[in-house]
Length: 272
Image 1 (tube, one colour):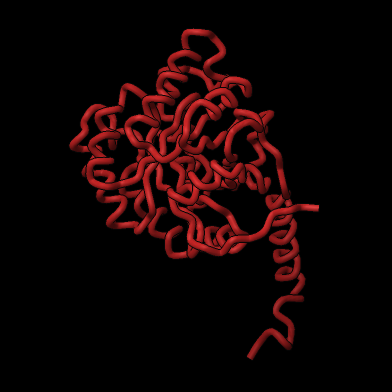
Image 2 (tube, one colour):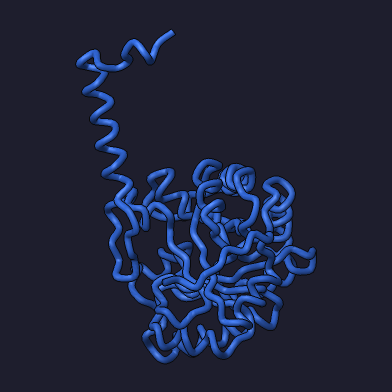
């Protein structure tokens, strides 16, 4: 039997740190629209990520790179309207923060002002330290993201597990400590060896959210379309499907088509 007790207080960055301190795991899931965000929030999710993965699951792009700042703001606005409890994090899209701290600050300010979200998430470590510092200087909370960083897919050339070699593992450890020292309130570790993720989680004081990083992190995040079986073409080892909503939708639509064709819908009770 589960010992989890729902807590209806608004989730804040401070509460996530408190959860890490007392050993309570953090649940995080993506959402991109009002209706799904409302359902996920009502279920008791701690953190909702408005991910640039919308590029893949909402827009049908191969990578996350095409997402624009305006598109992320649109999705962020939609999600925030449906959320009462969860902490809402918005991904800063590719090109909105790399290499130019002033542009990074302006992008983050737009996200916060126009969406009403709680914080932003950036991919990278030392390479974007100046941008993170600039954003934090405006009082905007930042969640980091290390390991497999999808916005750098053209650099990596593969979605394979990262930090398996010693040099890359050491850099990842260094970057995690750097993000902590800069003032990030949490960090996502994506698709890295479980032992490495667990070690980093113990070494730093801020919450570590894993995706494909084993069970030793402070919490877990998945893409909603993946875990609900809406996106059927993505089946990595770390993904657990909790439902096959895609099949349910297809079956329902087929039944609707049949009912229309056979004149069964609408019946006498379904008209005025």
